[in-house]
Image 1 (cartoon, rainbow, N blue to C red):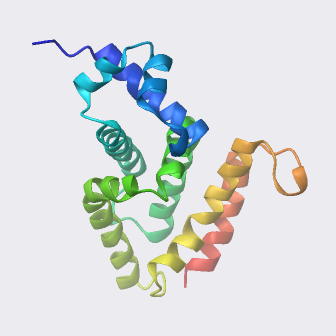
Image 2 (image 1 turned 135 degrees about the vertical axis):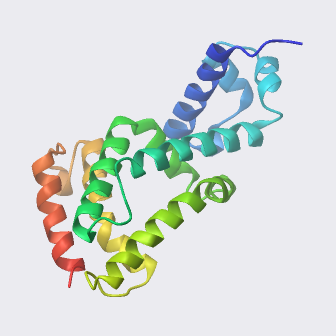
Amino acid sequence: MRHRDENKIQAIREKAIEMVANDGLENFGINRLAKTAGVSPATIYIYYKDKEDLLTSISIEEGLKMTRSTLKGFDPEMSFEEGLWIQWKNRAAFALNNHLSAAFFEQLRNSTYKEKMLETISKEFELTMGNFIVNALNRKEIDKMSLEVYWSIAFAPLYSLIKFHNEGRSLSGRKFVFSQKLMKDTFACVIKGLKK
């Protein structure tokens, strides 16, 4: 029986993330991945039964990594403003320091892989974030609203800043670089919109 070569597995994972992030799911294939990762297609099939198994496995691992990063230092008992600020800092750090993973997730957003990833990672995350929102509601820090409204107000502005940064341009093609000051200024507007 062959021993697991962690270096090869890591190379396969990294190149798969890079390929999907840069070229999309429709242009992703095992033969192309093998060539890019410097392994044979047979080597990939030692570790993964097929393309779907590979992408599902990577999406789950990356999803767990993102979830752990997002929840670092976060406690659902925190005040709404403090907890949301921790979320912003953690989400920004993950997205800015893991640009390819973020782009990889964006490609998965409208695919069957999204559901498989969410099945695995969502329980812990939903429980923690759900408790955070329930606590904020019980303390009368925020009004009750749908999840979609909450997410759109609470996080979409942050992800817009990150998108501008990754593209190097904002509206009208102006040069843009993400900064803590911009994040704090945007967060202040978000908090005004959400808190009672």
